[in-house]
Image (tube, rainbow, N blue to C red):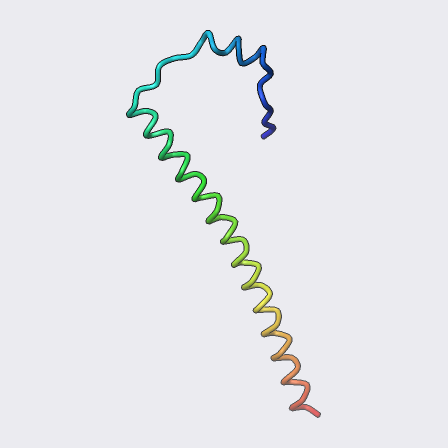
Length: 73
């Protein structure tokens, strides 16, 4: 999704269509924003943990192979 800043003209044009936002709705918007940001951070953390797990499994497999090689010799 591509995002862009509004130009001054676009801001002025949009200003004519502004609506009042009820406090209850603004609270819901704010809560959604916080939850969405938290979800994004948790997804990034999960990706990092999955990468760490993959690396550890790879190292573990390498160590097992190294141990097998020593026993055969």
